[in-house]
Length: 560
Image (tube, rainbow, N blue to C red):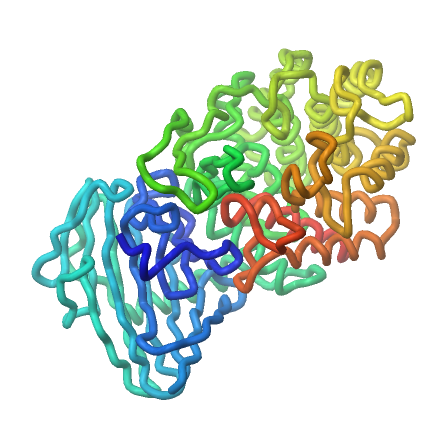
Protein backbone atom coordinates (compact mmCIF):
# COMPACT_ATOMS: atom_id res chain seq x y z
CA UNK A 1 0.00 0.00 0.00
CA UNK A 2 1.20 3.55 -0.77
CA UNK A 3 -1.29 5.54 1.31
CA UNK A 4 1.49 7.15 3.36
CA UNK A 5 3.27 8.63 0.32
CA UNK A 6 0.31 9.23 -1.98
CA UNK A 7 -2.73 10.04 0.18
CA UNK A 8 -6.04 10.95 -1.49
CA UNK A 9 -6.53 14.59 -2.44
CA UNK A 10 -9.59 16.79 -2.83
CA UNK A 11 -11.03 16.30 -6.30
CA UNK A 12 -10.03 19.71 -7.62
CA UNK A 13 -6.38 18.59 -7.42
CA UNK A 14 -6.75 15.82 -10.01
CA UNK A 15 -6.26 15.78 -13.78
CA UNK A 16 -7.34 13.19 -16.35
CA UNK A 17 -5.49 11.76 -19.31
CA UNK A 18 -7.48 9.50 -21.64
CA UNK A 19 -7.36 7.84 -25.04
CA UNK A 20 -11.06 7.04 -25.63
CA UNK A 21 -10.80 3.46 -24.40
CA UNK A 22 -9.65 4.15 -20.82
CA UNK A 23 -8.38 6.97 -18.62
CA UNK A 24 -5.88 7.75 -15.88
CA UNK A 25 -6.46 10.06 -12.92
CA UNK A 26 -3.29 12.03 -12.12
CA UNK A 27 -2.63 13.58 -8.71
CA UNK A 28 -0.45 16.53 -7.63
CA UNK A 29 2.46 14.31 -6.54
CA UNK A 30 2.67 12.92 -10.05
CA UNK A 31 0.76 9.80 -9.03
CA UNK A 32 -1.32 7.81 -11.47
CA UNK A 33 -3.81 6.78 -8.81
CA UNK A 34 -6.66 5.40 -10.92
CA UNK A 35 -6.76 3.43 -14.14
CA UNK A 36 -8.84 0.48 -15.32
CA UNK A 37 -7.72 -1.89 -18.06
CA UNK A 38 -8.14 -3.03 -20.69
CA UNK A 39 -11.12 -0.62 -20.91
CA UNK A 40 -13.12 1.83 -18.79
CA UNK A 41 -15.19 -0.78 -16.95
CA UNK A 42 -12.35 -3.26 -16.47
CA UNK A 43 -10.69 -3.93 -13.14
CA UNK A 44 -8.34 -1.25 -11.83
CA UNK A 45 -4.58 -1.61 -12.22
CA UNK A 46 -4.02 1.59 -10.19
CA UNK A 47 -6.60 1.85 -7.40
CA UNK A 48 -5.04 4.03 -4.70
CA UNK A 49 -7.74 6.67 -5.33
CA UNK A 50 -10.21 4.41 -3.53
CA UNK A 51 -7.74 2.95 -1.05
CA UNK A 52 -6.49 -0.01 -3.07
CA UNK A 53 -3.01 -1.04 -4.20
CA UNK A 54 -1.45 0.16 -7.42
CA UNK A 55 0.38 3.39 -8.22
CA UNK A 56 2.63 4.85 -10.91
CA UNK A 57 4.29 8.04 -9.71
CA UNK A 58 6.93 10.52 -10.81
CA UNK A 59 7.60 12.84 -7.85
CA UNK A 60 10.31 15.45 -7.15
CA UNK A 61 12.79 14.41 -4.47
CA UNK A 62 12.86 17.97 -3.09
CA UNK A 63 10.24 20.22 -1.52
CA UNK A 64 7.92 21.58 -4.17
CA UNK A 65 4.73 23.42 -4.96
CA UNK A 66 2.50 21.94 -7.62
CA UNK A 67 0.71 23.25 -10.67
CA UNK A 68 -0.09 22.12 -14.17
CA UNK A 69 -2.05 22.67 -17.35
CA UNK A 70 -3.29 20.87 -20.44
CA UNK A 71 -1.73 21.53 -23.79
CA UNK A 72 -4.53 23.37 -25.65
CA UNK A 73 -7.13 21.16 -27.31
CA UNK A 74 -5.70 17.94 -25.88
CA UNK A 75 -5.68 15.70 -22.84
CA UNK A 76 -1.89 15.95 -22.67
CA UNK A 77 -1.29 17.13 -19.11
CA UNK A 78 1.84 18.92 -17.92
CA UNK A 79 2.51 18.45 -14.22
CA UNK A 80 4.72 21.32 -13.06
CA UNK A 81 6.67 21.44 -9.82
CA UNK A 82 8.63 24.45 -8.58
CA UNK A 83 11.33 23.29 -6.16
CA UNK A 84 13.93 25.20 -4.16
CA UNK A 85 16.45 24.63 -6.94
CA UNK A 86 14.48 24.70 -10.18
CA UNK A 87 11.39 23.82 -12.17
CA UNK A 88 10.43 20.29 -13.22
CA UNK A 89 7.69 19.35 -15.66
CA UNK A 90 6.31 15.96 -16.55
CA UNK A 91 4.25 15.59 -19.70
CA UNK A 92 1.59 12.90 -19.20
CA UNK A 93 -0.52 11.26 -21.89
CA UNK A 94 -2.08 8.08 -23.11
CA UNK A 95 -1.16 7.36 -26.72
CA UNK A 96 -4.07 8.73 -28.74
CA UNK A 97 -6.31 7.56 -30.29
CA UNK A 98 -6.47 4.54 -28.05
CA UNK A 99 -6.28 1.02 -29.34
CA UNK A 100 -8.80 -1.42 -27.82
CA UNK A 101 -6.96 -3.83 -25.57
CA UNK A 102 -3.68 -1.88 -25.55
CA UNK A 103 -2.79 1.21 -23.53
CA UNK A 104 0.48 3.10 -23.91
CA UNK A 105 1.22 5.45 -21.01
CA UNK A 106 3.65 8.22 -21.92
CA UNK A 107 5.62 10.21 -19.34
CA UNK A 108 8.28 12.75 -20.32
CA UNK A 109 10.28 14.31 -17.48
CA UNK A 110 11.56 17.76 -18.48
CA UNK A 111 14.28 19.61 -16.55
CA UNK A 112 12.91 23.08 -17.24
CA UNK A 113 15.23 24.96 -14.84
CA UNK A 114 18.08 23.19 -13.09
CA UNK A 115 18.50 19.43 -12.83
CA UNK A 116 15.31 17.41 -12.36
CA UNK A 117 15.73 14.94 -9.48
CA UNK A 118 12.70 12.67 -9.23
CA UNK A 119 11.69 9.43 -7.59
CA UNK A 120 9.68 7.02 -9.75
CA UNK A 121 7.49 4.16 -8.55
CA UNK A 122 5.85 1.76 -11.02
CA UNK A 123 3.62 -0.69 -9.16
CA UNK A 124 0.63 -1.87 -11.26
CA UNK A 125 -1.76 -4.21 -9.46
CA UNK A 126 -4.36 -5.78 -11.78
CA UNK A 127 -7.73 -6.91 -10.48
CA UNK A 128 -8.13 -4.03 -8.00
CA UNK A 129 -4.95 -5.27 -6.32
CA UNK A 130 -5.63 -9.01 -6.47
CA UNK A 131 -2.53 -9.64 -8.64
CA UNK A 132 1.03 -8.36 -8.82
CA UNK A 133 3.18 -8.76 -11.94
CA UNK A 134 6.56 -10.42 -11.52
CA UNK A 135 8.73 -8.06 -13.56
CA UNK A 136 11.86 -9.52 -15.10
CA UNK A 137 14.46 -8.84 -17.77
CA UNK A 138 13.76 -5.57 -19.57
CA UNK A 139 10.95 -4.92 -17.11
CA UNK A 140 8.29 -7.18 -18.54
CA UNK A 141 5.65 -9.00 -16.56
CA UNK A 142 2.10 -10.28 -16.64
CA UNK A 143 -0.66 -10.98 -14.13
CA UNK A 144 -4.44 -11.04 -13.96
CA UNK A 145 -4.84 -11.44 -17.73
CA UNK A 146 -2.75 -8.34 -18.53
CA UNK A 147 0.81 -7.90 -19.83
CA UNK A 148 3.11 -5.02 -18.85
CA UNK A 149 6.31 -3.60 -20.37
CA UNK A 150 8.16 -0.60 -18.95
CA UNK A 151 10.90 1.07 -20.97
CA UNK A 152 13.18 3.99 -20.18
CA UNK A 153 13.83 2.69 -16.66
CA UNK A 154 16.95 0.54 -17.08
CA UNK A 155 18.26 1.53 -13.65
CA UNK A 156 15.11 0.61 -11.73
CA UNK A 157 15.26 -1.71 -8.73
CA UNK A 158 12.67 -3.87 -7.07
CA UNK A 159 10.99 -2.23 -4.10
CA UNK A 160 7.40 -1.02 -4.05
CA UNK A 161 6.95 -2.62 -7.42
CA UNK A 162 9.79 -1.06 -9.41
CA UNK A 163 11.54 2.07 -8.12
CA UNK A 164 13.92 4.47 -9.80
CA UNK A 165 15.84 7.54 -8.61
CA UNK A 166 16.42 9.59 -11.72
CA UNK A 167 18.37 12.80 -12.38
CA UNK A 168 17.60 14.56 -15.64
CA UNK A 169 20.25 17.22 -16.46
CA UNK A 170 19.10 20.80 -16.89
CA UNK A 171 17.64 21.54 -20.30
CA UNK A 172 17.09 17.87 -21.20
CA UNK A 173 14.26 15.37 -20.95
CA UNK A 174 13.74 11.69 -20.26
CA UNK A 175 10.95 9.40 -21.51
CA UNK A 176 9.23 6.57 -19.67
CA UNK A 177 6.78 4.33 -21.55
CA UNK A 178 4.50 1.80 -19.87
CA UNK A 179 2.48 -0.60 -22.05
CA UNK A 180 -0.52 -2.44 -20.65
CA UNK A 181 -2.14 -4.97 -22.99
CA UNK A 182 -4.63 -7.82 -22.88
CA UNK A 183 -2.31 -9.98 -25.02
CA UNK A 184 1.48 -10.48 -25.15
CA UNK A 185 3.07 -7.20 -26.31
CA UNK A 186 4.55 -6.67 -29.73
CA UNK A 187 8.16 -7.63 -30.28
CA UNK A 188 9.54 -4.10 -30.28
CA UNK A 189 8.57 -1.50 -27.67
CA UNK A 190 7.10 1.74 -28.99
CA UNK A 191 9.51 4.56 -29.77
CA UNK A 192 8.61 7.43 -27.45
CA UNK A 193 9.32 10.25 -29.95
CA UNK A 194 7.15 8.69 -32.65
CA UNK A 195 4.27 7.97 -30.27
CA UNK A 196 4.38 11.48 -28.82
CA UNK A 197 4.33 13.03 -32.30
CA UNK A 198 1.41 10.85 -33.42
CA UNK A 199 -0.53 11.63 -30.23
CA UNK A 200 -0.04 15.39 -30.56
CA UNK A 201 -1.10 15.32 -34.22
CA UNK A 202 -4.16 13.17 -33.51
CA UNK A 203 -5.36 15.49 -30.75
CA UNK A 204 -5.03 18.59 -32.88
CA UNK A 205 -7.03 16.92 -35.64
CA UNK A 206 -9.68 15.66 -33.23
CA UNK A 207 -10.32 18.92 -31.36
CA UNK A 208 -10.21 21.97 -33.63
CA UNK A 209 -10.67 25.47 -32.26
CA UNK A 210 -14.43 26.04 -31.82
CA UNK A 211 -16.43 29.10 -32.79
CA UNK A 212 -17.94 29.76 -29.39
CA UNK A 213 -17.69 32.10 -26.46
CA UNK A 214 -15.20 30.99 -23.79
CA UNK A 215 -13.40 29.15 -26.57
CA UNK A 216 -10.60 27.86 -24.30
CA UNK A 217 -13.01 26.16 -21.90
CA UNK A 218 -15.26 25.04 -24.76
CA UNK A 219 -12.33 23.44 -26.55
CA UNK A 220 -11.26 21.76 -23.33
CA UNK A 221 -14.79 20.40 -22.80
CA UNK A 222 -14.64 18.99 -26.33
CA UNK A 223 -11.28 17.35 -25.55
CA UNK A 224 -12.63 15.80 -22.34
CA UNK A 225 -15.64 14.38 -24.19
CA UNK A 226 -13.43 13.09 -27.01
CA UNK A 227 -11.07 11.46 -24.54
CA UNK A 228 -14.00 9.63 -22.97
CA UNK A 229 -15.38 8.38 -26.31
CA UNK A 230 -14.10 5.07 -27.65
CA UNK A 231 -14.02 3.29 -30.98
CA UNK A 232 -17.64 2.15 -30.53
CA UNK A 233 -18.76 5.79 -30.38
CA UNK A 234 -19.80 5.36 -26.74
CA UNK A 235 -18.87 8.09 -24.23
CA UNK A 236 -18.60 6.96 -20.61
CA UNK A 237 -20.38 9.10 -18.01
CA UNK A 238 -17.22 9.42 -15.88
CA UNK A 239 -13.78 7.86 -15.59
CA UNK A 240 -14.17 6.78 -11.97
CA UNK A 241 -16.32 4.86 -9.53
CA UNK A 242 -17.12 5.34 -5.84
CA UNK A 243 -16.28 9.03 -5.44
CA UNK A 244 -19.01 10.13 -3.02
CA UNK A 245 -21.49 12.90 -3.74
CA UNK A 246 -22.03 13.35 -0.01
CA UNK A 247 -19.72 12.06 2.72
CA UNK A 248 -21.05 8.89 4.35
CA UNK A 249 -24.47 9.42 2.76
CA UNK A 250 -24.49 6.17 0.80
CA UNK A 251 -24.42 8.00 -2.53
CA UNK A 252 -21.53 6.23 -4.22
CA UNK A 253 -21.97 5.10 -7.80
CA UNK A 254 -20.04 3.50 -10.64
CA UNK A 255 -20.23 5.79 -13.67
CA UNK A 256 -17.77 3.99 -15.98
CA UNK A 257 -20.56 3.21 -18.45
CA UNK A 258 -22.38 4.90 -21.33
CA UNK A 259 -25.75 6.42 -20.47
CA UNK A 260 -28.03 6.92 -23.47
CA UNK A 261 -29.17 10.26 -22.06
CA UNK A 262 -25.62 11.53 -21.55
CA UNK A 263 -24.63 10.32 -25.00
CA UNK A 264 -27.48 12.27 -26.55
CA UNK A 265 -26.63 15.39 -24.52
CA UNK A 266 -23.08 15.09 -25.85
CA UNK A 267 -24.29 14.66 -29.41
CA UNK A 268 -26.56 17.71 -29.26
CA UNK A 269 -23.72 19.77 -27.76
CA UNK A 270 -21.39 18.59 -30.52
CA UNK A 271 -23.98 19.54 -33.13
CA UNK A 272 -24.30 23.03 -31.67
CA UNK A 273 -20.52 23.49 -31.63
CA UNK A 274 -19.87 21.96 -35.06
CA UNK A 275 -17.90 19.03 -33.62
CA UNK A 276 -18.88 16.60 -36.40
CA UNK A 277 -16.78 13.58 -35.33
CA UNK A 278 -18.17 13.66 -31.80
CA UNK A 279 -21.69 14.10 -33.14
CA UNK A 280 -21.37 11.18 -35.56
CA UNK A 281 -19.99 8.96 -32.77
CA UNK A 282 -23.01 9.70 -30.60
CA UNK A 283 -25.45 8.98 -33.44
CA UNK A 284 -23.67 5.72 -34.26
CA UNK A 285 -23.72 4.41 -30.68
CA UNK A 286 -27.34 5.38 -30.00
CA UNK A 287 -28.50 4.01 -33.34
CA UNK A 288 -26.97 0.62 -32.58
CA UNK A 289 -28.54 0.41 -29.13
CA UNK A 290 -32.00 1.44 -30.33
CA UNK A 291 -31.91 -1.12 -33.15
CA UNK A 292 -30.73 -3.88 -30.81
CA UNK A 293 -33.18 -3.30 -27.96
CA UNK A 294 -36.09 -1.29 -29.38
CA UNK A 295 -38.77 -0.65 -26.72
CA UNK A 296 -36.56 -2.44 -24.16
CA UNK A 297 -33.78 0.13 -24.55
CA UNK A 298 -31.57 0.12 -21.45
CA UNK A 299 -30.63 3.41 -19.76
CA UNK A 300 -26.91 2.51 -19.89
CA UNK A 301 -24.44 0.11 -21.52
CA UNK A 302 -20.76 -0.70 -21.32
CA UNK A 303 -18.48 1.21 -23.69
CA UNK A 304 -18.66 -1.75 -26.10
CA UNK A 305 -22.47 -1.85 -26.04
CA UNK A 306 -22.82 -4.72 -23.57
CA UNK A 307 -24.96 -4.96 -20.43
CA UNK A 308 -23.92 -3.07 -17.30
CA UNK A 309 -23.04 -5.55 -14.52
CA UNK A 310 -25.09 -5.71 -11.35
CA UNK A 311 -23.98 -3.58 -8.44
CA UNK A 312 -21.40 -5.05 -6.06
CA UNK A 313 -18.78 -3.90 -3.55
CA UNK A 314 -15.06 -4.58 -3.27
CA UNK A 315 -13.04 -5.08 -0.10
CA UNK A 316 -11.24 -1.75 -0.32
CA UNK A 317 -11.36 1.25 2.04
CA UNK A 318 -12.83 3.57 -0.59
CA UNK A 319 -12.27 7.28 -1.09
CA UNK A 320 -12.59 9.10 2.27
CA UNK A 321 -16.24 9.60 3.11
CA UNK A 322 -17.36 6.84 0.74
CA UNK A 323 -16.83 3.19 -0.04
CA UNK A 324 -15.96 1.09 -3.06
CA UNK A 325 -18.64 0.02 -5.54
CA UNK A 326 -18.66 -1.54 -9.01
CA UNK A 327 -21.57 -2.12 -11.36
CA UNK A 328 -24.78 -0.12 -11.38
CA UNK A 329 -28.41 -0.86 -10.58
CA UNK A 330 -29.44 1.23 -13.60
CA UNK A 331 -29.30 -1.97 -15.62
CA UNK A 332 -32.69 -2.98 -14.19
CA UNK A 333 -34.43 0.36 -14.73
CA UNK A 334 -36.74 1.70 -17.43
CA UNK A 335 -36.14 5.35 -18.35
CA UNK A 336 -38.73 6.65 -20.78
CA UNK A 337 -36.97 9.95 -21.41
CA UNK A 338 -34.15 8.12 -23.20
CA UNK A 339 -36.40 7.57 -26.23
CA UNK A 340 -37.02 11.30 -26.44
CA UNK A 341 -33.31 12.01 -26.19
CA UNK A 342 -32.59 9.45 -28.91
CA UNK A 343 -35.10 11.11 -31.24
CA UNK A 344 -33.70 14.57 -30.51
CA UNK A 345 -30.27 13.29 -31.54
CA UNK A 346 -31.48 11.37 -34.59
CA UNK A 347 -33.61 14.35 -35.64
CA UNK A 348 -30.56 16.60 -35.46
CA UNK A 349 -28.69 14.09 -37.65
CA UNK A 350 -31.52 14.01 -40.19
CA UNK A 351 -31.61 17.81 -40.30
CA UNK A 352 -27.90 17.82 -41.10
CA UNK A 353 -28.24 15.04 -43.68
CA UNK A 354 -25.99 12.81 -41.54
CA UNK A 355 -28.44 9.95 -40.95
CA UNK A 356 -27.81 6.68 -42.78
CA UNK A 357 -30.24 3.80 -43.41
CA UNK A 358 -29.63 2.31 -39.95
CA UNK A 359 -30.25 5.70 -38.39
CA UNK A 360 -33.55 6.05 -40.21
CA UNK A 361 -34.59 2.59 -39.01
CA UNK A 362 -33.60 3.54 -35.47
CA UNK A 363 -35.70 6.69 -35.74
CA UNK A 364 -38.77 4.70 -36.70
CA UNK A 365 -38.03 2.17 -33.96
CA UNK A 366 -37.84 4.90 -31.30
CA UNK A 367 -41.13 6.43 -32.46
CA UNK A 368 -42.82 3.03 -32.23
CA UNK A 369 -41.29 2.47 -28.77
CA UNK A 370 -42.76 5.74 -27.53
CA UNK A 371 -46.16 4.74 -28.91
CA UNK A 372 -45.88 1.52 -26.91
CA UNK A 373 -44.46 2.80 -23.65
CA UNK A 374 -45.12 6.51 -23.04
CA UNK A 375 -47.90 5.76 -20.53
CA UNK A 376 -45.65 3.46 -18.46
CA UNK A 377 -44.14 4.68 -15.16
CA UNK A 378 -40.35 5.00 -15.29
CA UNK A 379 -37.35 5.90 -13.14
CA UNK A 380 -36.99 9.34 -14.72
CA UNK A 381 -33.93 11.45 -15.36
CA UNK A 382 -32.76 11.29 -11.74
CA UNK A 383 -33.30 7.51 -11.52
CA UNK A 384 -35.76 7.54 -8.62
CA UNK A 385 -38.81 5.38 -7.92
CA UNK A 386 -41.05 4.56 -10.88
CA UNK A 387 -43.68 7.23 -11.57
CA UNK A 388 -45.18 9.05 -14.50
CA UNK A 389 -42.55 11.75 -14.41
CA UNK A 390 -43.52 14.95 -16.21
CA UNK A 391 -40.11 15.42 -17.77
CA UNK A 392 -40.11 11.89 -19.21
CA UNK A 393 -43.34 12.41 -21.14
CA UNK A 394 -42.48 15.91 -22.32
CA UNK A 395 -39.02 14.80 -23.40
CA UNK A 396 -40.63 12.20 -25.62
CA UNK A 397 -42.81 14.95 -27.07
CA UNK A 398 -39.70 17.04 -27.77
CA UNK A 399 -38.10 14.12 -29.59
CA UNK A 400 -41.24 13.48 -31.63
CA UNK A 401 -41.39 17.13 -32.70
CA UNK A 402 -37.73 16.95 -33.73
CA UNK A 403 -38.56 14.19 -36.25
CA UNK A 404 -41.79 15.73 -37.54
CA UNK A 405 -44.27 13.67 -35.49
CA UNK A 406 -46.28 16.71 -34.39
CA UNK A 407 -49.58 14.90 -33.83
CA UNK A 408 -48.02 12.34 -31.53
CA UNK A 409 -46.18 15.09 -29.64
CA UNK A 410 -49.34 17.16 -29.18
CA UNK A 411 -51.19 14.16 -27.75
CA UNK A 412 -48.46 13.52 -25.14
CA UNK A 413 -48.25 17.20 -24.15
CA UNK A 414 -52.02 17.40 -23.75
CA UNK A 415 -52.17 14.23 -21.66
CA UNK A 416 -49.28 15.40 -19.49
CA UNK A 417 -50.80 18.86 -19.02
CA UNK A 418 -54.09 17.31 -17.88
CA UNK A 419 -52.42 15.85 -14.81
CA UNK A 420 -49.11 17.62 -14.18
CA UNK A 421 -49.71 21.38 -14.24
CA UNK A 422 -49.42 22.98 -10.81
CA UNK A 423 -52.24 25.28 -9.61
CA UNK A 424 -49.79 28.18 -10.08
CA UNK A 425 -49.60 27.37 -13.81
CA UNK A 426 -46.13 25.84 -13.90
CA UNK A 427 -45.14 22.24 -14.54
CA UNK A 428 -44.79 19.96 -11.53
CA UNK A 429 -42.65 16.84 -11.16
CA UNK A 430 -45.41 14.24 -11.47
CA UNK A 431 -49.18 13.98 -10.93
CA UNK A 432 -48.60 13.12 -7.28
CA UNK A 433 -45.63 15.42 -6.61
CA UNK A 434 -46.27 19.17 -6.86
CA UNK A 435 -42.63 20.16 -6.39
CA UNK A 436 -40.30 21.78 -8.89
CA UNK A 437 -37.44 20.00 -10.60
CA UNK A 438 -34.49 21.14 -12.71
CA UNK A 439 -35.46 18.66 -15.42
CA UNK A 440 -38.65 20.68 -16.00
CA UNK A 441 -36.54 23.35 -17.73
CA UNK A 442 -35.78 20.92 -20.54
CA UNK A 443 -39.22 20.75 -22.25
CA UNK A 444 -38.90 24.34 -23.44
CA UNK A 445 -35.16 24.11 -24.17
CA UNK A 446 -35.68 21.01 -26.33
CA UNK A 447 -38.89 22.15 -28.01
CA UNK A 448 -41.66 20.07 -26.41
CA UNK A 449 -43.47 23.34 -25.69
CA UNK A 450 -42.58 26.89 -26.74
CA UNK A 451 -40.31 28.95 -24.51
CA UNK A 452 -42.98 31.66 -24.35
CA UNK A 453 -45.70 29.22 -23.30
CA UNK A 454 -47.03 30.46 -19.91
CA UNK A 455 -46.17 27.09 -18.34
CA UNK A 456 -42.57 27.44 -19.52
CA UNK A 457 -42.21 31.00 -18.25
CA UNK A 458 -43.75 30.23 -14.86
CA UNK A 459 -41.65 27.10 -14.45
CA UNK A 460 -38.41 28.97 -15.11
CA UNK A 461 -39.34 31.88 -12.82
CA UNK A 462 -40.40 29.58 -10.00
CA UNK A 463 -37.31 27.40 -10.40
CA UNK A 464 -34.94 30.36 -10.17
CA UNK A 465 -36.81 31.68 -7.12
CA UNK A 466 -36.99 28.38 -5.24
CA UNK A 467 -34.14 26.12 -6.36
CA UNK A 468 -31.19 28.39 -6.99
CA UNK A 469 -28.86 30.30 -4.70
CA UNK A 470 -26.03 32.67 -5.48
CA UNK A 471 -25.75 31.59 -9.10
CA UNK A 472 -25.92 27.83 -8.48
CA UNK A 473 -28.85 25.52 -9.16
CA UNK A 474 -30.17 22.40 -7.44
CA UNK A 475 -32.15 19.47 -8.85
CA UNK A 476 -35.11 19.54 -6.46
CA UNK A 477 -35.82 20.10 -2.79
CA UNK A 478 -35.25 16.91 -0.80
CA UNK A 479 -36.75 18.21 2.46
CA UNK A 480 -36.96 21.34 4.58
CA UNK A 481 -33.19 21.71 4.98
CA UNK A 482 -31.37 24.53 3.18
CA UNK A 483 -30.61 23.52 -0.40
CA UNK A 484 -26.87 23.04 0.06
CA UNK A 485 -27.24 20.76 3.07
CA UNK A 486 -29.18 18.04 1.24
CA UNK A 487 -26.86 17.81 -1.77
CA UNK A 488 -24.42 19.87 -3.76
CA UNK A 489 -25.35 22.29 -6.49
CA UNK A 490 -26.02 20.29 -9.66
CA UNK A 491 -23.87 21.81 -12.39
CA UNK A 492 -26.01 20.37 -15.19
CA UNK A 493 -28.95 22.37 -13.83
CA UNK A 494 -26.88 25.55 -13.69
CA UNK A 495 -26.11 25.26 -17.39
CA UNK A 496 -29.78 24.50 -18.10
CA UNK A 497 -30.73 27.80 -16.48
CA UNK A 498 -28.19 29.51 -18.74
CA UNK A 499 -29.82 27.95 -21.81
CA UNK A 500 -33.34 28.72 -20.59
CA UNK A 501 -32.67 32.39 -19.81
CA UNK A 502 -30.86 32.80 -23.12
CA UNK A 503 -33.79 31.20 -24.93
CA UNK A 504 -36.19 33.82 -23.57
CA UNK A 505 -33.83 36.63 -24.58
CA UNK A 506 -32.14 37.50 -21.28
CA UNK A 507 -28.60 37.29 -22.56
CA UNK A 508 -26.91 39.00 -19.61
CA UNK A 509 -28.54 36.60 -17.13
CA UNK A 510 -27.57 33.63 -19.32
CA UNK A 511 -23.94 34.75 -19.36
CA UNK A 512 -23.91 35.18 -15.59
CA UNK A 513 -25.23 31.63 -15.09
CA UNK A 514 -22.74 30.26 -17.59
CA UNK A 515 -19.76 32.01 -16.03
CA UNK A 516 -20.71 31.01 -12.50
CA UNK A 517 -21.05 27.32 -13.26
CA UNK A 518 -18.07 26.92 -15.56
CA UNK A 519 -15.84 28.19 -12.76
CA UNK A 520 -16.75 25.27 -10.42
CA UNK A 521 -13.57 23.36 -11.23
CA UNK A 522 -9.94 22.98 -10.21
CA UNK A 523 -6.69 23.77 -12.04
CA UNK A 524 -7.29 20.99 -14.58
CA UNK A 525 -10.65 22.48 -15.61
CA UNK A 526 -12.50 19.23 -14.91
CA UNK A 527 -16.11 19.36 -13.72
CA UNK A 528 -17.83 16.86 -11.45
CA UNK A 529 -21.55 16.24 -11.12
CA UNK A 530 -22.07 18.32 -7.98
CA UNK A 531 -20.39 21.31 -6.36
CA UNK A 532 -20.33 21.96 -2.63
CA UNK A 533 -20.86 25.71 -2.64
CA UNK A 534 -20.00 26.32 1.01
CA UNK A 535 -16.70 24.44 0.91
CA UNK A 536 -16.03 25.23 -2.76
CA UNK A 537 -15.30 21.59 -3.44
CA UNK A 538 -16.21 19.21 -6.25
CA UNK A 539 -18.31 16.14 -5.38
CA UNK A 540 -18.99 12.88 -7.19
CA UNK A 541 -17.26 11.01 -9.97
CA UNK A 542 -14.74 12.75 -12.17
CA UNK A 543 -15.02 14.14 -14.76
CA UNK A 544 -18.78 14.13 -15.34
CA UNK A 545 -19.15 14.03 -19.11
CA UNK A 546 -22.66 15.47 -19.36
CA UNK A 547 -21.59 18.58 -17.44
CA UNK A 548 -18.81 19.18 -19.98
CA UNK A 549 -21.38 18.57 -22.73
CA UNK A 550 -23.70 21.26 -21.38
CA UNK A 551 -20.78 23.66 -20.97
CA UNK A 552 -19.95 23.13 -24.65
CA UNK A 553 -23.57 23.54 -25.73
CA UNK A 554 -23.93 26.73 -23.71
CA UNK A 555 -20.70 28.15 -25.14
CA UNK A 556 -22.00 27.49 -28.67
CA UNK A 557 -25.59 28.67 -28.21
CA UNK A 558 -24.73 31.78 -26.20
CA UNK A 559 -22.29 32.73 -28.95
CA UNK A 560 -25.21 32.86 -31.39
